[in-house]
Structure formats: structure tokens, C-alpha cells
Length: 253
Image (cartoon, rainbow, N blue to C red; front, side, top):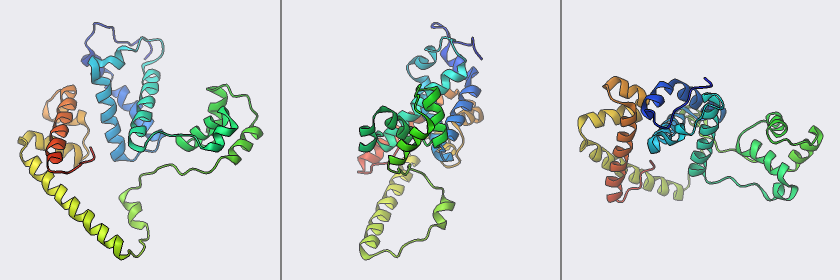
């Protein structure tokens, strides 16, 4: 794949579509590396493609063929993942103990606590990528002083169903009732907002968000251009957000 590049005056859309298989594979690799569940992986994939399309394919035009396209995309999409995760979870910060022990401890905590690497994987990255020369026993001593951190995880419905539920108290029951009322109101408002859309737009959103069909597959089914469909879905979501916001509903899109 080395040598494939996008000249400044070339057709960005044609290049994007011609390399879509590579883009999809790298997205899948990054999602698997960070253990994203399917729904979140689909959303992140759409996020990546929109970013690659933005600014007349500005990111893809930065690729000059000095490495393989796969290597370039892996670096880019990993950075996009960090931004995506920081936006959803908040920016990661090292603990006070890691700061006291210095840069190597901060890197080690970042790799194991934030990025989900095993200790062995983190040691390998410290040596090969960050040129850390500490011995394995020295790194083990640092790791032993770092407080355990639980990475945020998203469990599927099957796992949630297996979790034992505590008996709720009166306050919890009241709060659950309020949440259910708010959710019911939001569903009703969304149903009305969707009904105002043209039938084709309703179909596009149903395929994407109810059936989990990728944007590229929807475009193929409906004989549409993928680039235009990405942008059209973004406009539809913005419209729905505006209508729901007008009804005092903050919808998490």
C-alpha cells in the first residue's frame, strides 16, 4: 500500500471511496484494540469517516506516501479515538502518585490505566516507542505503587440482565419514576419529530440506528453517494436535536 497517495489537486472523494476497505479495516482494528462494543464501534466508525471527509478530505491529503496508507491511517484513527473518548468520558489525568514518581510512571499508568494495555504490553511500548531503559524489576516496582484504576466499560444487555439488582428504596423508586416519565416524553417527542421527516429520511435513520446498518451499506442499498449520505445524516440529527431541544429535551447525540 506504500506509494498510494492523494495529490493536492486530485478527487478526494474518489480516493476516499477507493481506499474505503483499508479505512474500514483500520477502524475495526482500533475498535477491537480498545474493546469497543458493537454499537459504540459503529458510532466511532461513522465519526472517523466524517472526520476524513471534512475540509475536502484534509486529513487524507496530508498523506504523502512516506509510509503505508494503513500505517498512516492507524496513527490518525488512534488519535481520533483519543479525542472521541475524551469527549465522551473527559480528559484522562495521571494520579498524584504517578506525578510524584515522574514521567516513566505517568507513561506506565497511561498505558495500563487509560489505554487498557497489559503490563507486559506496556513494558514493550515503553522500551520500543518511548525509549525507556529501566529494567523490568524497576518497572514492576513502579507499577506496584500505582493505585488500581478501573477502566470505563460498556456492558451489553445480556451482561446487565445477569447482574443482581439491589432492593430499591423509596427515593430510588421515585427517581426511577421521574426518569421513566422523562424517557417516555422524549420518546414521544422523537416519534413526532421523525414523523415530520420524508419517508426516505425515516428509512435511512431506521436502517442506521435501529438495524445497525453501516452508512456505506445504506448508500449502496439506496443508490446514494456515501460522502453525501454521511453529511445528510449529520444534518438530520442536527434537525432532530433542534426540534427536541425546542421541547426542552436534551437528546444525547
